[in-house]
Length: 244
Figure 1 (tube, rainbow, N blue to C red):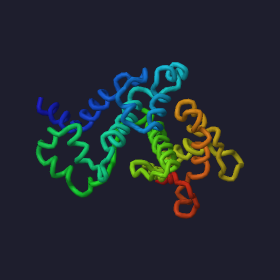
Figure 2 (cartoon, rainbow, N blue to C red):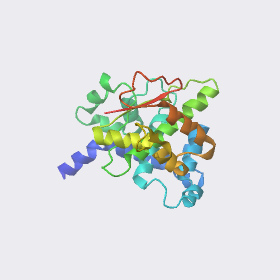
Figure 3 (cartoon, one colour):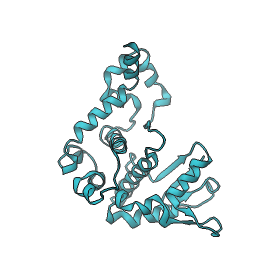
Figure 4 (tube, rainbow, N blue to C red):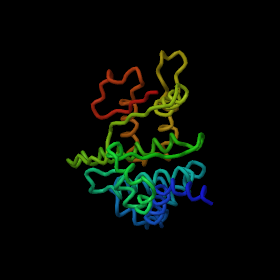
């Protein structure tokens, strides 16, 4: 029993955040969830595109599975909903919002309050083959479209960005990420890639509402930097730096 308790203790933050997310997202599929009133119009539109029952039915066979959906929703709730209005949103703040009792366990409060946790950061524990890259791409689109919409209104909302760095654990995953964002290498193409074969293009019906599709395509085409280009390629509107 002590081993079970310890395991549950380690996942207290995840459990608390997931419970909060479930409560806020009740009725999301039908467009009646509380979360839709707590996020930006851009995020609300994305949520209905990704998870609204009509869109899910229309894309039968091309949807996020339950684990991917939970990861995306947890990140949006943690960062955009719970972190709204917080200039220095930290791990300690997130604990206080969804799992305050867990701070009483052992030395957790001291650890969580340390300076190294003094900025927003989120971790998803997903097994190999469960679609981490799709979660990554969905969250980048969420950030990109929100930042762009805010800047168009003259607002520089610090919760959102168009600057991304993706770090792969090795060369194989690095190449997979280049495939996902830029498409497969063209044979005899001197290193050029076929964007039509990228995840973003092939699965655009899942990732991107129609009205934003060309905007996202243009950003990805013009702003991805492989590891040899980082610091050398000029990208005025943002960057997706991919390295290992």
